[in-house]
Image (cartoon, rainbow, N blue to C red):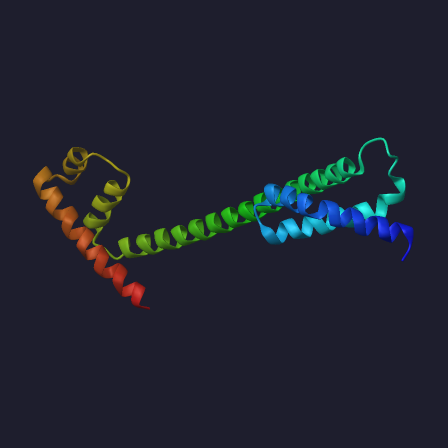
Length: 165
């Protein structure tokens, strides 16, 4: 075994537990912490001959671990944001598409109503006040409410026939 291998083995033995705990503190996940600890010590191995003894070697290893964890967190947050953005966009598309289909079906059902019923339900959908709708339709507000109830019931039946197919 070379001197570098012996030195590395000793460094790993004396620092791995503390580095694991540091990584675990950043990730909250044992598996990710273990991966980050291994990545840290891989960097230590690759750069061991560059260590300049300006600080304690344990401080140097700790600094590598912190940078490794911070880099991992940035990547993890970016991935989570991208995944979340993709899911939100996908969900919004599905919702919009589904709503458009439902609206199209609703209007297809409305087209099967009598002309007066179509006019009344269209005004209801346009959120016109019942008082105004009653005046335009030339009926009392009480009579309008009964008609709207019947129209909604009729629309539900028509809609359900389409839903079965």
